[in-house]
Length: 417
Image 1 (cartoon, rainbow, N blue to C red):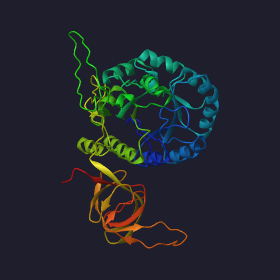
Image 2: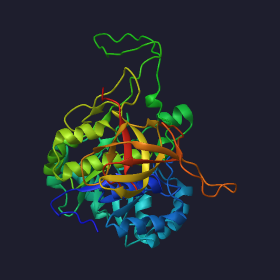
Image 3: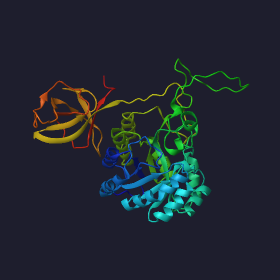
Image 4: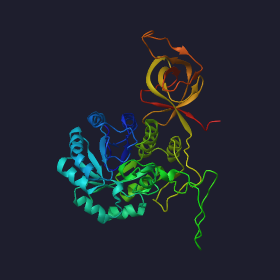
């Protein structure tokens, strides 16, 4: 089981579905946060059926990983009426904490699941010690910092808040134009409430501007034929500044991304795990460049957060090539891999392998073959030698000169000449 040092902050990872959960656990998370099919802020994520939560919790706990259930949407009367059954089911499943933002939800959690810890969501906007103290007095054991807080603000909160109250802060992922996520744009423009988990992300849309006169005041706008992305926030990346957050009193480092796929979760969790375990910052930064991301910034931690008004787009130095599902030795310094194709790769290509606990390493693809799926007419089809793996979601076999394990990922580096 994974045991976190008392002196080291917790690494908290998103688990938008079962594959993301498995990736987070395998690549080094100390805890994960997830949601059932209601009450979570990411309703577009795969999420978990309520009946599947016990199995997810058992899987995580078997690896020594804690599980926090998000119940942090804006709650109306109908939500509160349905919430007790969810609370009781989640408690019976063994979740370690509820993430809440609504006082009614907190009250019901104390009544219907008194043995489960309570964490106060960033949606609650806790940005001072007095607010933190009130939540603590009501039974919370942790607050998630409002995202507009600076490192200095967090240090001040830590100094003035009850010592036993834990402080969690985001270190990586998408930033909301409305800062801590308390946004009305989506409800107003798309009739989808972001505060109830259905954000349509209108802050990422392009806008055509009509010039307005404001004497003595100017706001820089970059606009092309598509418009401008004036509300488009950059992604957060604090990989090079974790010591500052730890010194300020943060006890849990949170990665955003319950809408992300397992490859993304594995890449980012692996990078931050490496950072916490002492890897060089250059390695960690290069690893995070492999994940699909908007331009990075340090959010509000050292001043005003940056926007990307010129465009909304993602970049990465790598493409997800394949998921390893089996690997067997075939001779000295040779292993036969079976993997599910995600993006095109070829015989003779040099791929990068992402494996827990070590820096990414390169493997050469040799003896590539397609593995047709068995059917009634041919229950044991023979491998078909090919020059290119280009059937997405289908299986291929090939030989490499380094051992791999099921659950490892292979990627194609884009920045190699």
